[in-house]
Image (cartoon, rainbow, N blue to C red):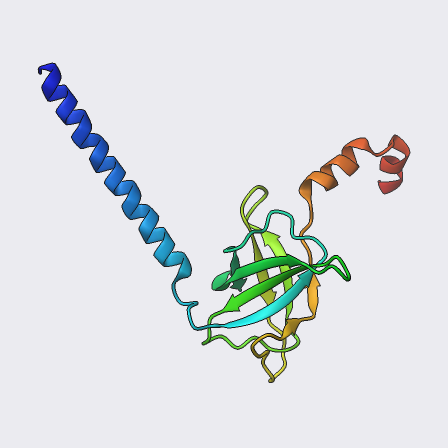
Length: 156
């Protein structure tokens, strides 16, 4: 193979790989936003949202039913407010609770909704009042590592 044939082959191979990458990016973008357009918004306040971001999933029983539309800080109480966009076909009961959980030890974090038993559903703009913020694995590890021996012996 001559150097010009090598160069042409490498160029075509690079273009092919770039095309596959663009296809996968487009496919993942479509799949993550699918089914939520035209949904309704709910508000959930959390004490901590470590590791969360706009676009993170909202799940019920492990099934995606929405996404985080925006995150803001309430200046009166310093709580993080998450605006959740929920699929319009899913009715969230008024007594439901929301919790920030992670997919494994180092996985992405998402909002998990535990469905309540109320017959009345939350409507556009209403708040999920029972929430639990994220738990910082780093702070738990550092508390354990840097606690005194007396604290560790009392725990046993």
